[in-house]
Length: 302
Image (tube, rainbow, N blue to C red):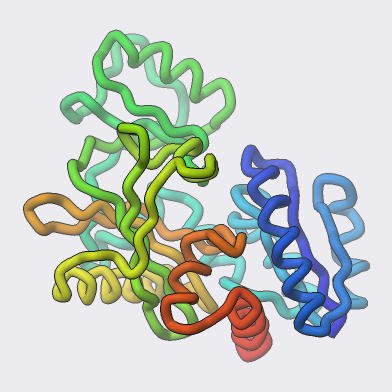
């Protein structure tokens, strides 16, 4: 097939997107496809024209555009099939404050939150005890994420984040370890347990993308009943948001055995060593197999 590989864009996650696209490009070629690379940052106005001349689009964008559903809506308008979720599901999943409402309405456990549509007044204080996490409402890759340990850090953190982000959410600290679980088609994959290295307080951007920044264990060494619950919640979140194809859901697993759903990623990282490809490998799917499966699912959704 003639495949349009869409990556780059103009979000803060541009470099993550481009790095992942290299491996996807190579896999597509190994699978026998012809590949055209398209970066919306340079030529967004030409997307519909070039999409019409391709059999399929493989989207590897992170943040907005990409995870916000805009590119998916554009492709759908010219009937160019693509992998992953439709525009509506993508838009809802990217917005943390909205998706958390969906989780709650479906009985899925997610931490309390406070939505900030603009920089609050100087006398504003979080409704949670310190430390709290303040992060972008629509960002990913742990960019725009800060841990605030005291009131003394609050004003500077808000100023820093609102300088680049238009919306934030505040969440309380939930003690525990991070676990992530992918969904492929209609099945949940084996979860991954994530342990930040070097005493990092949480799984931040550096821990995610610096070699050796975190220890990722797949399948996660969790009690059998917890693994089953993680997979059940990941699949339920995927369906509650109306997603298709694949997704990856992040959790905190607390010492008391409880699970806390943080967010769902509709375009998870896709380097050969990213979390979802690790999970696919645990069930016998190579990186090339995973790419082929995502194309198959995308074509079947049309």
